Length: 105
Length: 474
Image (cartoon, rainbow over all chains, first blue to last red; front, side, top):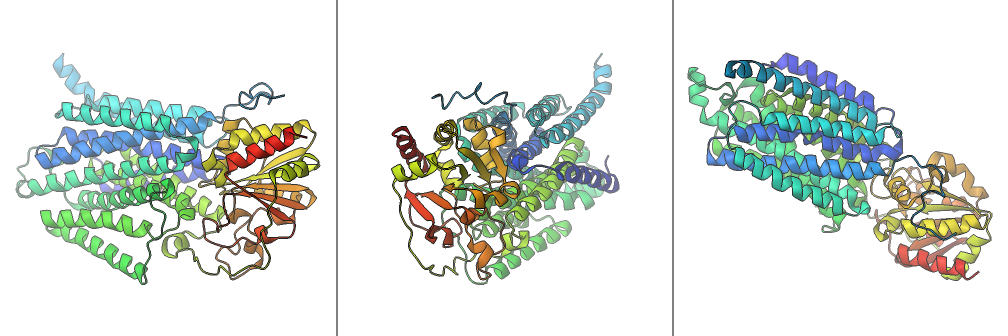
């Protein structure tokens, strides 16, 4: 069991870590990082699965189903969107090598 | 054999959650540096996969069919929608998925509340069989806080989604709204306090309903220009809600990952608000005045694309300022095509990015990178602002408030003090704009009326196409 005080320690340490990681981030990464952290709280899916896995009444099952549905959307959607954003950050070799869009000389 | 599994499986599962938490932290760390950012999401993704898979192995899990059905259908829907959506619509997708996470946390809390209510008599008598059926003390507080914050995040994010998607284009504000919102918030908290004493189903429903209403009330009066900050704030909210419900479920991975995002999201929100020179309290509680639209002397002077093309082709230095108008028109590819033509003619071309150009910080960088614009041509506001006065032509594409000199000159203006790009210092400027209306914030732009400024009307994609034609004709 995690009692209230242990939880307080975990909360505080995780919060400090979160602040620390974000404190020196270039502006370019703000949007991808918001999206990435949006993906990480998709872990709520696990909680939703546990809640539905222990649900007994119809009401609880309904809530649980909605929770899993929403949580999975958070996780899957968050991943895809973040990955697509970060794809833009692949290192570019030379500007002539990779201009597949504007290919006039 | 079964004994062996029963003894070690819980340890293995706990260990897997631990590893997942470490992967999330590492992933977020990597995502915060440009060089390692791409790998970061993969690390976090592996953590998520691991945590999800081991959850199926937890003892006493039932309703497996329901779990699988919800999981599979939603994953497919979100995956496909996330893949298909245009890069320009990414901000609202983040809002949508974030709202879903907040909603999920809220419903987890609701299950804990109703389950606790069903077993309240048994628990008080000390005869309940399962520990998780009892809810009391600190756990109850966390469950309630998670429902409240998650509920606000759910409806608030949906409104933010609607606003960015263009479904809701008005601010709904009425006199005394802040007082009204504060009263609703206090009633909601009051209901939560009542629930700690008496678990009444009607009160639970009322509490949940008011949490959702609060999210609507908080977000509807906020203007579209402030949406990035709001989404980032709700992102932090969802993190907190997830962390709290993680405590209710005694799941360490949820507690750590949720709080990590709660803190990171809060700081990101502050950084974004700072970049826009907006105080967070002002974003939430003061609506950006549509007033102060003082008439500015002079006219907006139009220019033909051919003339604009000639002006740029024979300039020594050109600075391009992309804004949201470029994003909606998906004009980044055409823009790069045009830029390459100018570069080939020996024109020194730079891109100037305002920290909050577009709807989110970094939005423009992502779009330009997508089109293949090399990093060394893209400059931040601090670096490029001193160069405008030596620039022959500044080309503004669908940006408005971030180039409005009123922010420097008129203390009465609602955007006064906001850092802007000094386009007004360039020798000439050309603004591509769809129409003559005011910008997102509804404020007249003095730049458009300046003597050395010309307007090129049209959709960004189309206007740049005409500029390219003009350059080709030279």
